[in-house]
Length: 288
Image (cartoon, rainbow, N blue to C red; front, side, top):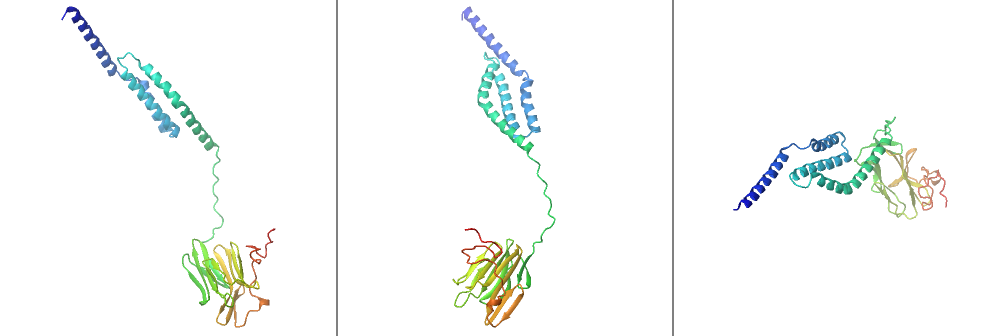
């Protein structure tokens, strides 16, 4: 090897050694305090203000800080400086992230303002009176208590005439069977679902009352909800040769047909029901 080549080799070795020494020195130095502070400070702020916006900002700031630390370590001993890479990265992030952060901050501000101006809820005043959950059924002048989910047979004359009641989901439901007229099937109501087979009879009802009338518009069955827990049943029942009227005055039985001029039940609704659906006698007729 010539002396000239030996000098070039020694110069190259010194250059490599200098670069290695500079790199090791740079890596052995502590990282800038401001870079670590940019990680720690947002974390502390997020712990104090745990809002969606603060969490987003913490994640963003921590990522930027770690990126700067890595860039500074990577550019140690190289011709390109960390500030150039950081600047390019910051410009790209501003184009992408700033509009999104602006939208998030706006939504957060609107939610904060709405929360601040929303009036405080009015405290609920306890009621002065509270009704005891107790159910009753009155048949004529006899009142019987009802138990939830237990069917109670109020009265049974024969297979054609009977009255039962049951409380289901806080509602009193009535089942009844009564004589439906000569040659007709009985009037049947089963847990408030009814069927009137006699085509000459009529029925009318509302949310608080149900009524069946015969061809002369005389009441044959009435179910009245005085309150949601207090139900009254009136009706004309026949068993064998007996006619039994259950009304506000009590129970009256006779072997003779009832006097239509002194009918024990007073009608509730207007008829025919197709013209006055749900309209009681005390109410005015709806306009045409």
